[in-house]
Length: 307
Ligand code: MF3
Ligand code: CO
Ligand code: CO
Image (cartoon, rainbow, N blue to C red; front, side, top):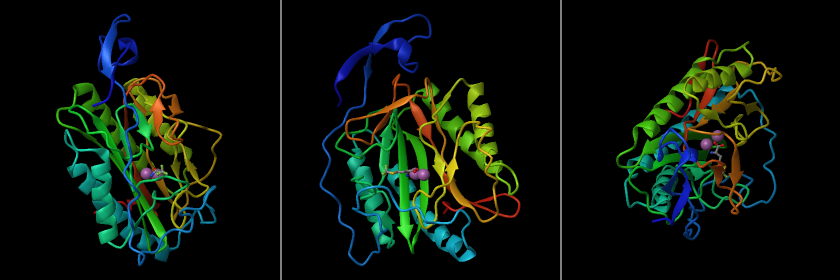
């Protein structure tokens, strides 16, 4: 159980009243102890960046070959199944480290490498981001509580390529506002995916996602984006979730990238914990995220992170 703190109800729409500024008790996320590093069998090939300091070398192409895409289907499939396996274990009392263990074992059992483990120093095999944590939460000894909103982001490296996906699930009984946020964030991602077509500007994705989010007054996180992905975890290609008309990149058949909107109940602005990873909304409003890795086809998008 975390420490209970007095915070402004106005800054926390799920906990307080809608009118005026009142005090209420809200449980804020905070870091818990982390378990020792998990082992990956030596026979499983790992990405070149593992345990190397500094940025990943992004020499991967924006447009993948058909043969690369075939390998990404398999990495994506394992990433999806591992994520669903982790999500199944979300219930009050289970720690995010236990979720990480489930994800880790599943990936290794399928001869994949958990791409986040050792990525620029990240210590775990997936990201678990709860409530006001936007993304990059580090699995630790915090037991999940009834009503928590839990994001699980899993990436798998197999056969030289990555597949990256994220889902949001409720722990126990979720309040209506969080349930709505979850459903609509999934819908925002699906709309972004449906907007993908060769010849259109990449910016169309952010435009449809932001327009949809604005209907509900949600914040759209700007500091973290979708990204090109294939032989690199994060290639140079950037996929925004908001409208940025100056982004004139054109979508091409064969491109592979993620669409991963993060929508907040309040302000989209964020800060990072002292651990250098955990990203939290400044107003402590809750955040949901969904992510899929897609491949641009002749007339739309193929989802690579699918069973
Ligand atoms: N999977 C995340 C993404 O969607 C990246 C996690 S990087 C980590 O891009 F180091 F935080 F794990
Ligand atoms: Co991603
Ligand atoms: Co991800």
